[in-house]
Length: 274
Image (tube, rainbow, N blue to C red; front, side, top):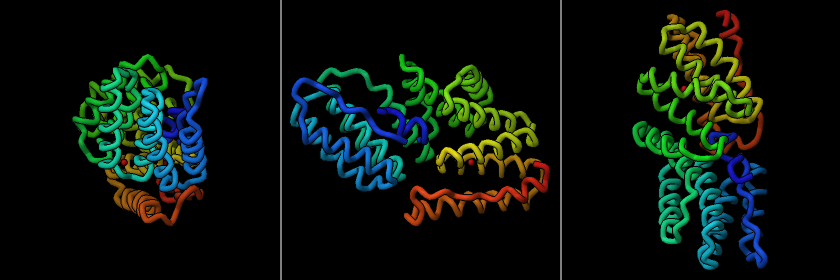
């Protein structure tokens, strides 16, 4: 489950624990407790456990376990919306892995890309995602293509966005299919087809909500708002932006964890339906 936490989020599961003939039980316990806490919607408790797991992995001098604990810690911090802390954790992990000549770090670059995107560093986010795009792991490549596409869309780079959308199009992975729909909506918006963009974005909003990917849901709401604005429907756009803000504000203040968030689509449906 190493990548499920991040790759099906953005940004939601945790790393499998590296098994050896003589496992460090303190490491094993911390990893398992961290995974359980995350799945129950308590990333703050998960964070503490992964710090413990990282310390145990360093004591053990086990590169694979350092990687797994570092990945999970960074992903948990991303879920807590602490991008600066994510980058610090990744720097520490990658420094430790470089010392031990461990090179399988494409998934770490994926988390780095997401953190930089949260900080609105589009150039840095795209560069990290392009590194992850070289991964032999299909799931990592798919998510990297999505992150490259997000940065390209925000920069108005239709050429790069078209390329990333095409890379995701053949995938049958459920997460990649949603990411493809996201990029397709953004591409339609940049190609001056706001009605199509609005329809795709609102459909995606429902799918992201059903998957409890509220960060992705909010991104889709913002795309829908931009599409409504492009059609001159300012009232619908304002309603969509307010829905996004309400969801984000509640989650950031800790008042919503794993509960279902309902976003009304009445105004959009009446109009015929970041």
